[in-house]
Length: 118
Image 1 (tube, rainbow, N blue to C red):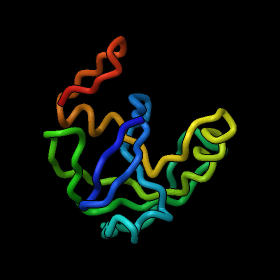
Image 2 (cartoon, rainbow, N blue to C red):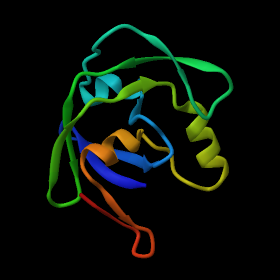
Image 3 (tube, one colour):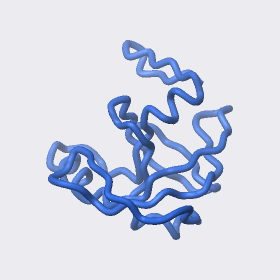
């Protein structure tokens, strides 16, 4: 997990290299001031079946002390993810940083040091 700022608001994001797209819990849309871009679609993921999702417009994201960039997210219901995290003793998340973010920003993950380099 990593701490971030989305449109100036604090966020907790799960680092998930297996997720194709970066996502934000749809209940947090207004909190982060995210604007919808496009029509809803069915998304498949780590849950049972498909879920309704919608893309956001690019927004401002800050990570660590120096990274600042733009990122669009998929808005979808992450209640099932948070339920699983809490049952395992972890904290709830606001969203997920996925492979789209890591590829676009040429990220390097040092697992031994638990660091993300952008």
